[in-house]
Structure formats: C-alpha cells, structure tokens
Length: 372
Length: 127
Image (tube, rainbow over all chains, first blue to last red; front, top):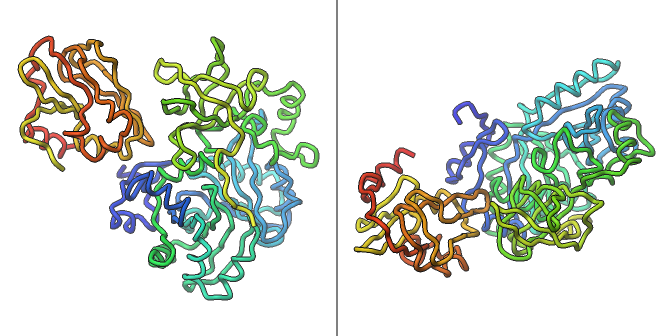
C-alpha cells in the first residue's frame, strides 16, 4: 500500500482510527467503526465521505458543448448552467469506458466527475478525442481537488451549521443534480445536490488546501446533526440498496448502457455520439442481458460473479451483491437474460455450489426522498 | 485483544478447545476484528466428517467471505445454531457464546501445527 496515493484527508482518517484499504490506486478508509453502523447513520442522520479519489476533468472552450455531445450518451443540450447530468462515455462497440456526471458550470465550461479507477483512462481518451476538434481544452485537475460527500436526512442542517445563512439558503433551494459555486473557508468551492447513497445530500468539490478545515467543520456539527465519518464499505451497501451502478462490478467496457439499465440517460433519438451505431444495432436485435435488482428469499449472501439459474438454465451473473442493511436480508444486482426473466420471477443463485432462492425485484431496492 | 491461555490456535485463526475425544472449535478475536461486521455463518450438518485442514464452513462479513478450516480431523456432533442465527453474538464473544462446532476427534490434534496463546499472539502481531 506504500505506493497508494493519499487524499488530503488521509491523516484525519488515521486519527479517527479508520481501517485503510487500497482502492483504485488510493489508500482509502473502508470503515471507521462498523459498516453496518455507518450505513445506519447515513439512512437515519448524516454521514460524510472522503471521495477525493474521484477524478475531476474540466472541458472548456468555444466548442466544448458540441465536443461533449460527440462523446457522451445523454443529451448535453438539455443541460442548463448550474445543472448536472448523469452520462457515460462509450467505445465504438458501445461498451462503457466509464459512467460520469457532467456539470455545466458556465457556458462552454464543464466539470466532469469520473471514477477514480478510470480517471487516467478517461482523461487520456477524452483528451485524444479533443485533439480532433478545435476550440476545446481538456484538463485533468484531479490532483488539485478534494471531494467530500455529505449524505443523509440531516445534511441540510449540516450545511446550515457550516455556511453563512445566505449560502445555506441558496443550497436549500437547489434542485436535485444542480451545482452552485460558493466561496467558503476562504476558497471557491462547488456544492452539488448529488450523491451515491439514495439519501438527500451534497457533494462538495473543493481545493485540497481547504479539505481539512471543511472536514473538521462538518464533523464538529455532530452534536446537532448526528453526522459521522463513513467509509467505502458503507458507501457500497448504501449505493447498492439505491441501485446505483458501480463501474468494474455492474458494468465495464464490454457492457453497453442499454444492458446496464441506463436507457433513460441514453438519448438515441436526439444525440449523436461515439458508440451509438452499436447501440442502435443492439436495440434492434434486442439485448441478451440486462441489469436487474434481486433479493434473496432465504439465507446466503450473493457476491460479484456468482451464476444465476432458472431451473437448470443459466440466465446470467450477479454483478453486485451484499447484505442490505436497511432493506433487510441480502440481495444485489445481476446481468440477466431479459428473454428469460422478468421482475417478480424466482431465480436461484449458485453460492459456493449451493443453489439459493432469490427473486427479481423492482429497482431501486431502497428509495428515500432524494429529489426536491 | 484477548487470546485465552487454555486454548490452542491455528494460523488460519481458528481456536480449538480439546479434551480426550471431543473438541470445541471457533474463530479468534483477531479473525473477528479483521472481518468487521459478521453477517452470515454457514456451518456443516451434524454427522459430517472432515479431515484436518478441510474447510467445514464459511464466515462472511459485509465485504468478504472466509473459509473455516478444521484444526483436527473428526465428526461433527453439534453445531452452534445461535452463532448461525445471530452472528453478532459471535462478534461480541468469539470464545464462549461464539463457538462454532463440536467434533468427535478421529485422531489427536497435530501439536506441530497448533500454537499456544503466546505463540498465536506473536503470530498475529506479524500480520
């Protein structure tokens, strides 16, 4: 782990006695107390996460919008200044290079938040595509930015406690997926109404030098808000209940957005983008695997790559599985053959040689009030 | 971390409490701490027999699954259903409430592979 990169908050995690693990080339806190306790804290009160390992790529220049439309699956023209959009970049075969969120900070000025483990790959690819265009500048500013997620029902209270009233008020009126630049702690930072937990919350993009003081200010509200530091372990169980995809588990560069179940973000009618031809073909022929959620009906905990059966026929594989602390029991997501299974069908998961009963479920497995 | 001196330990982090013919087997406080939240325990049926070193079940935390290995050859005569039904009891008390199986030993434990409490404590310090 000695070669793993450390976030600006690494010493804070050590002083909180976090268990540190390597993740995507980074030394990251997996838990501070217990995954189950941390999960509960986010669902019932509030948790803060150091997600500084995520990448920040800026795309600017007079042709930035047109350029982004060529490489992303969603309709960038629907995005207004101050808004964010879930999207993905594809290879020519329609496989996902990454999923990402694009924020429109100003006209022809975009911030793309990408996955930590894909950051170098994404940046290299976006940069290489941009060289075919004029009037586009692509910059990787991941090393300058930290990222702190504040998630849970009391997260508005946390914001009120750490920000001047006017700024906190401005955050309260933001819609889901919006982003706002605020000067706080003597630095310019971006507050987005987004998250990866299924709870109401914010993600703060801030310069490294402000990370420590913001982290401490957030934690200092514990008495009023119940806020706790949360590791990657609970981040994974939280996102799984909310049925948010995890790159490397639920999709990779051979899985298309239609298969991954993000058809809603894939604008085949209005947009033209790299990989679209492959998707049109796939859509015409029908996909042979699709992302479904499922819940176990008895004991057994499903895990990534376990095989799924209906009777003697193999119908797919588990892509993410775990206990579901708030929903109860265990479950996850799987890539299953949609010609053979549908929601409510019973399936069997091969858990280390034993078939365990499960049922295909409607997504998400857990739903709170995330939108305004 | 507590390693009772009356028990013997394996490098796979099981403990064994043996008398003449029978032995009680569980996992150590170190194993429990490393796993984090234990959410599922899978144990064999009474009557199943295992060679020394064979996997007799699994213990699962929120993130990982670990095999349980027999410190000694034998036939399972009792399993701790409480540990299966409420894995948190195993988490809180791995040596008393958290025992996993009782076996009728088909040989004697191999002294060479088992550590005493001091030896095991030294071993986990290197981990």
